[in-house]
Image (cartoon, rainbow, N blue to C red):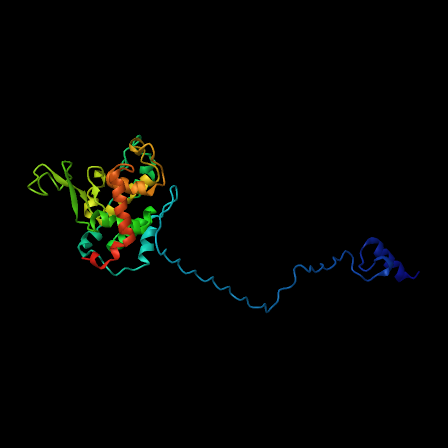
Length: 302
C-alpha cells in the first residue's frame, strides 16, 4: 500500500472524508431521496377550462285562482283571509250591481272579542278559538268581490253565498229590518221611526246580521259590507263544523243536529232553529235563487 492509500484509509476511518461509501460509491452519505410524486395531487393546469355558470331555474307562473270557491267539508283547514284577497283580486270584476254599497264596500271591519260565541255549554270553545278569531272584515272591493272573498275565507260555495245575500237583502248593505227593543248605539228607541217610540231596527246589512245576538260585531256589521259578510259566514261555518252545541237541544228527534248538514245550517241562520218549518221555507227560497242565478238577471241591477 502506498503512502497516499494509507492516508486515505486513515481519513475514511476517522470520518473526515466524504465519498468513502461501501464499494467506493461516489453517492453522498445520508442524502435524502427526492419525494415521490402523488398522482392524487397533480399539478394545476395553467389554463383550466372555463366553468359555465348555471342558469337560475325559471320561476313558475302563479297558480290561477279557482273558477269557483266551493264548500269545504268540516274539519278542513280554511284559507287565510289574505290568500283569499289575492285569489279574488286575480279575477277582475268591473261591474258593480249595487253602486249604493260603495261607501260600505270601502270600509274594513274589526276584530271580535274572545268570547263572541257563548261558551262553554252553548258552543264548542273552538267556535271562538278557530273561527271567531279569524273575523276582521279586512277586504275592500265590489259587492260581488266581497261575497267571493267571504266564500273563499269560510270554505262555502260562492253561489250559495250570493243566493243567501239575495234572499237577505237583495245585496243592499244599507238595509235594516226587524223591530225590537234591543237597540244598538247610534239607534236609540224611536230614532228609526217615530211611530215606534220604544223600538229600533236590529237586523243590519247585506246578511241582515241581528244586533241582539251578535252585538259584539258592532259597529262593523252596519258600517262595512266585508265585516257583515265575515261575521255572518263565521256563524254559518260554526254551525257546519258542529260547534253550535245548543242546537242539540232544539233539533227534532228524527233529525238531530250534526256537523256537515249545510241545509240545516243555512236554515238555522234564518230561523234560529234546526230544520223547522221556517228554516225549510228559507232554504227552499235560497235554492230557487241559486238555480235561477238571480244576481245575473238583468232586473237585479240598480
